[in-house]
Amino acid sequence: MPSQNNQFVRNTKLVSILGLVSVLTLSAKDFWEEKAFNQWDEKQALRILSDSPWAKTQLVLGGGESTGRALDTPRVLTPGGGNTAGAAASSGTPTFGAGSVPLYVRWYSSQRIRQALGRLGQLQSNASDEQVNQFIREPMQDYLIAVVGPAMKPFEDANLESLKGKTFLLSKKDKNKKIELKSYISPKERKDGMALFGFPRLVNEKPSLGLADEEAQFVSQVGQVRVNVSFKLAKMMTDSSLDL
Image (cartoon, rainbow, N blue to C red):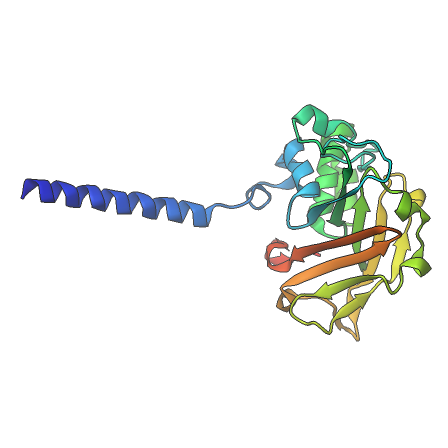
């Protein structure tokens, strides 16, 4: 009888421990939900820019570009005038092997992406709070998708006309929804080396994207480079609002 009681107690403790682990797992929050952006360290800011609900990384053939690049991207201009070149190499982030290089696709018009860039400006270039806040609060009339990476020649050669009919935002839920490209800024026109794709926030006076779409897919054919990444909209929340 005592052995049965001991077994019951052990089983009860095990269930309690497993229940506690489940609760902690469910309640765990990402650092960007728990900490103000001005408390992020450099690795956290870089993660927002490369592996977060607002940023995806796609590998493409290098096209003759040098390989073994660090996970961070070169020439990411921050509000203080600096860039993130070399930051990943010093922070121990992985490199990519021969034959492929990363393209970083970011929802640039989102507050989170601009917070990450602003934070890097503070950490690397001593950007002032005023500079950073002005940068973050700059009105974004359209959705802006930024693409940046080591192999940007196809994006430098592209223009709005060559991309129309080949570049869209698509809805996972509504297969008939296809948001057409509105504007394009070549990396040649920017100090940070990013290509910027603009899409209208409103179509027929209604928001072009919403949580009901579940995912937004950015697709573009730029020369020989095919970009195809998806963003889960329910995860792209800032202060309880969809942050696009």
